Length: 416
Image 1: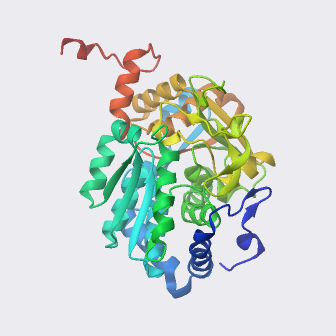
Image 2: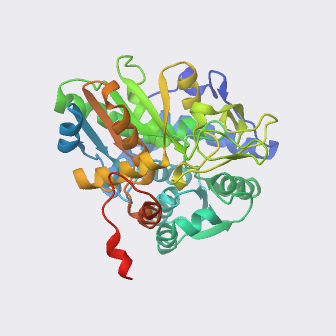
């Protein structure tokens, strides 16, 4: 692979760019140079080592599994890309391992990262332990409290976890704090950003590390089904698993790409209090700058960033990657959303029918599959971006509040 104008361009149409303090520009220029040399041109065999470590440490390739009972339920062929089987239980390791390895090639001595649901933090902590790099993770206090197992996993891998109490104490604030740390330590620190967000070259760097998902899927579906899918579905928060699943299919105009966002409890917003009871940025957001890039945001009329919320910690982000914003704006990707209850039903349905407990993020994709399978063609691939062990406490709590069609009986807990 070699550098071309498209790779070197810091924008995706009207989106992307580098909206950062002057103090961070040298670090971004250093990273851009490393991206072009090591990732695009495979200098010093970087990509060869990355692929080898993904295989031997991460467990790639992950399977593409025909979902027999879902296929029967929907009377069409449903295939699942099993990123939940990657080491650590989610797609996040693809990017975390790539960036920590890149940091070593760049001569950095320390890693910082942000995390929402904890999967990126867990993956970064694992990669840092694997590659002998000191690591600090910033995580909103709200997410620390609702994702305790992942916090403990990070600590087990030797990472320091710093709770962030500002604002809504979720992912947006965690990113702010990580950027502040990085701005004062750029000479020896690399910021492992967790999604296809932030200033150039992060959106392309993260996408290229995650693109292995779609590359494998494209080969596997042709081998197993004899053709490309009619639709590929992935949940979308910041969008790393989304672009990872979509990137290899973007040139294939006959393959529909659906980015499923968290509709939360409502798609309405509370302008007065700057609250959005959803994270449906691609569907309802407007253009603005967040965390160093022009993209689509959940914001008020005067540009105040909304506090987003859904049942899934990993989708609670007021922005989205600039490349996804561009692909939606040009019509190549279709943004859709499902609410909390549809996601919870998707969680229980996949667990019961296929024996796969999905992350709550992923469950939104299965909620959309249930609602709209008739419009998705005869051959559908769903990206199972992560497993749901981390979400069991949340799911049990939320399920007890609701009368969910797909949920098991929880009366067994009444005698406690």
